[in-house]
Image (cartoon, rainbow, N blue to C red):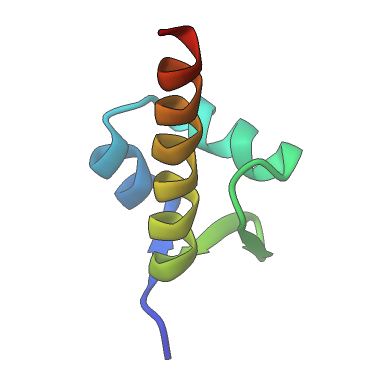
Length: 65
C-alpha cells in the first residue's frame, strides 16, 4: 500500500502554506481523500501530480521559444 501523507507533510514537501494544500484538495486539483476532517494524499498521486505540473510547464516554455 502507498504511503498516505497528511496535509502538513505535503505542505512541508512542496514549501507552500497549509491553506494552499487544503484548497488544492478541496478543488480536486490535488488527488486526495478526506478521512474524518483531514485530507490524505497518496505519495504516488503527489509525485504523479507534480510530474504533470513540470511537464505542463516545460511544454509552455518550449512553446514560447
